[in-house]
Image (spheres, rainbow, N blue to C red):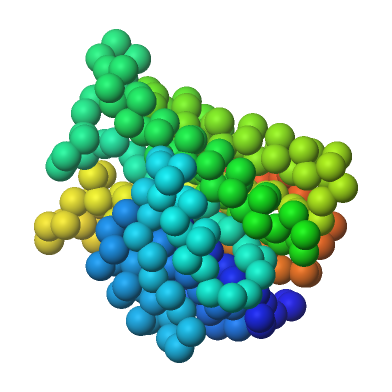
Length: 264
């Protein structure tokens, strides 16, 4: 796989989960990683893990002014990669959590989830295109299997991720039509064991048992890891995927293919 030496890889939502794994993976391939997160401390922790040359910046992906501050603060190197990894479910315990079934989903919850998962991606693509216009680059959006199926208890989250697929294709065609060497693709993770699954798995002594039950529904027999998704992100971002744009790579252990009939 082609390296990223001398190029900046800006990762949103880099404070944990898939975003952090992507930042560390791109750093290993030589990228100048800019780890961003609305939680500045978490972004700084990722930058420390990524090693020498990595930078941490606080970014609220919902806010154009925050994007402009981050772009103005980038190291003196071309932006070659943007990973739109920031996302929220709006589910589970804690601030902002609420029911998301069709009958009780509030507009407040819907708008809060869309603001991060959809508006944040649109803004990221907008600013990345501007920064990559002269030298080209790659945008990788993090979607979800929830955007490809019906999820009765996560209407807002599923809708936001379905929209990410459409945005990805539209951005890819826009850049191609404008003659820009800017590619845009998405990864579509399935059941990945990250902090975002905390609402379903919990953090008690039975967490491993619950994860095993989820994994049993996956054809490959387990939940995936953030690092496995990061491998797909790194490939899409690389020159090895130079002829790939406007597509989605599914990383779900075979769930999209259908149920598996286990033998024995």
